[in-house]
Length: 158
Image (tube, rainbow, N blue to C red; front, side, top):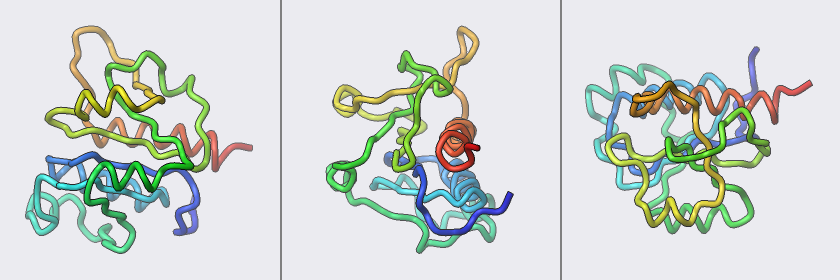
């Protein structure tokens, strides 16, 4: 299914990403699905990093990525929209969550998630269920799984 390139649906936000290959894979996912990507700085690598460039290939369109200098700037921009944190600490499974078209799905740093202070202030939290004794899915995989369900509920519903 082909989608127009305007960003009128749910968004993915990355909190201070620190693994270039994951960010590049998420950029590709966003490009192919017509989803806006937002990056909350600082970013733990340069966009010229060869590991990043190898994965992102020709899917990179810097104009389609919105950058925020801080979480506070990001939060101010979302005053009228929901921020939904994807976290292994959530109780609610992503398929049970009722997504809205203007939601922003927030994913923490690969190395540390989001700070506990932010975790406490974010009202909506969801997770991808996993078998016991596994730490977490790859960030790019989690983002693809959850954004697909969000799109199914909000954009592609029949």
